[in-house]
Length: 116
Image 1 (cartoon, rainbow, N blue to C red):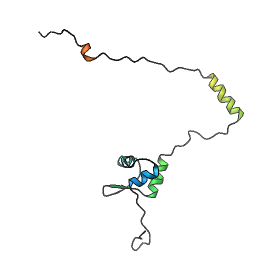
Image 2: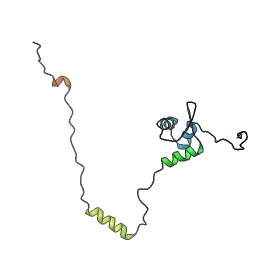
Image 3: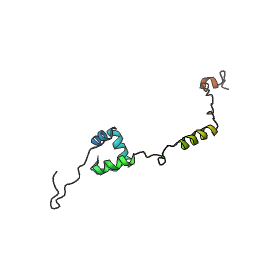
């Protein structure tokens, strides 16, 4: 990589949306759409979206799923406790509603309407 004149530091490599999409296993459209909505970090060069390695790492962190609660070691006591909690909880069936189709508009109109 070429160094910047006078600084001795190489500029960061900029990746195209297609390259980021290949790493993430998604489409380039998704990457560009998220950048357009400002949901992921990016750099704008002209009208093009470009990404650095730091941007990619942050995108991965942003979409990372964490456990809902801290992991607890499973013991016989916690297994018995969860079984007892499940036995106490009443089993409720989801309420069901029967869907009915609307009659067509022509059937709702008066069949013999007269114009006076």
